[in-house]
Length: 451
Picture 1 (cartoon, rainbow, N blue to C red):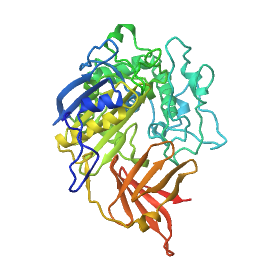
Picture 2: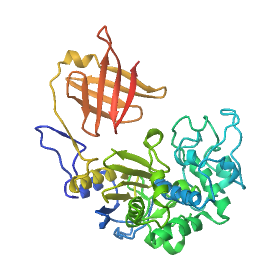
Picture 3: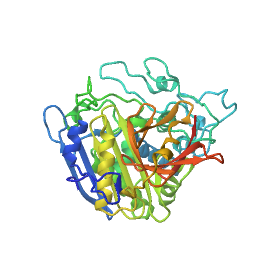
Picture 4: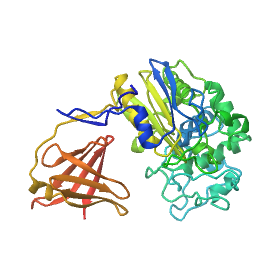
């Protein structure tokens, strides 16, 4: 499984290029990787690869990594536990639960109220996508300072920017509002309420939301690395936005979270949530998101997933609701998400998952005159575009701020990429001019207008 990481796209008749995990780690300068696989309702295996830090200490099963945004699904579970025990309401004004701070009125949505359901599903219209973290030894803001964007906070104020409930917009800021609501309701620190409500009952004994990480656990922690293969200056950053980004954990502990969710759905493990609340958590809303977790697959084989990115740590979790399968990959470097996706694809092949496996495409022959018609700039948003160029008989695509990649024809109007599972379909108007395209990726369609 780790000797040959399959590419995302296979071309009919071509021998695929295959690289080992060790080779890819060296290429991407990823010092350490940790993996846990769940199969048929139990942890099948867990293993570390590479080193945890400059001292050469190997990554082992209990090596701690920052989970980044994978902190959110467990924090959401705690919030839903509070709903289940009638300490919070999913659909009441969240300001009723807040005492230390309140969501201010907004001119963007006069008289609007924000609910916990909207915060957990990223539909509250709340600002601030993610958080930058704080270097050890530098001033760290209180949660209220983060919410108001006042010094020493390094992010803007968390405010209502759009009418709640109208749009999906990923918001770490919304989870920070939720964190304050839980703290105000429980009258205890967030790490303690998470330990008591979720981590302890599930049996996640090698996990904590404490920020910074206590000195007693530092020996078990992986070092954060930059994209250049160097340790992050000052070490792992500190995230007071614990619900959004503060979890330290291991793949094996996150496997216990997967098993808890799968067991709760089946009525076999309800240490935190009952089956009805777990079902509500995994019910798709806008943009295929449930409450704190992204959803994929189909009605027969739905799965839940979340990625995590903190400075020097990148990770991925995928798990099926019904089959008892899933996996977690955690890395200790910028760029680790690429390794995580490649390993997850290899695991999908090994365990015959219905999703995430490589797709097979058939290459077609298209005249250069046809390719020339597709050259140009296509606008996805006012600030994000994709430029298509022709070099010889090869068409290339380059998105704003990204590398240039070749695209290959399946037909005269439909093309695919090899680096990711994505298809581009060009549309021609009645006069024979190309006016827009559709990008098909991840089960979703994105329209881009030709400039």
